[in-house]
Image: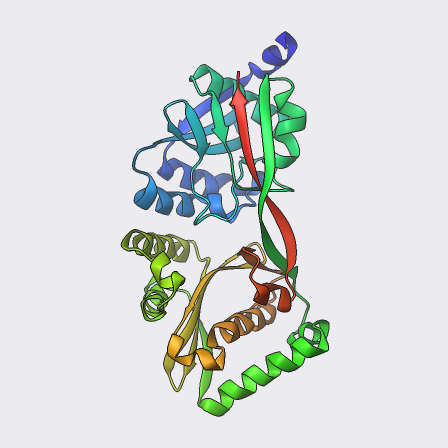
Length: 331
């Protein structure tokens, strides 16, 4: 233990603001594995603006001789720390670390949190290939007198995208392929069908309007606070060039919309809404189909349906990825 502490003394821990975090992303992104879209600076800031009351930001960066090796975007409430975000709007969370520096970063972080009086660390939700999952239990907990507990709590679905739409269709079971073509044909026979993608934040108004029209649990989800978050998120992600809002129209009237983010070759299907008056045309399902088609045509390599085991995700080719809870006690 003394040897570990001695080896970690060369590292410096700094506190960051949301603005300085954004600067680090712009200036040092290439040196860090900034793989999780839900901890990008714009996402974190949007979440904090709407949901941050009651906690304190505790954004920490770790440096080795002036070189950034990792970032822990934390929030604190009394003696408990967690990654900024929440499971209802963030499908998974993670730290941002330079490849190969995971063990040292996490050891430095845990020692620093302990010195700050933090005794509990809630890192959920996490993926099986995240930094937290791969390194915290095996490489850090045994050296830092920590107890780490992880349990499966959900699944998300994603899939690799082929080079063309026709190849994608051929990859589906024959029954699903026929059903998909039938739905497209029904929509085209009902009027003039169009699907367009917008990259400006004002397009989120279409999504929010259709939430209001859809008298279901989805409409109940979009509270005034959640609406504020969606607007703040659209602003920040549009500013980063990551926002894709796909609008499906029938005779120039919006009937379904998907809110997506494109990042590092992957399209993330974040949320969607449709007009229940056109439910008989399966417009909600069709908006996802058109989104996948657009993603393939733009050359994206992956499509992520995100959390939830809805049947349509399986029908469209999604494969399960487990999502875990993760809690660490620091002693």
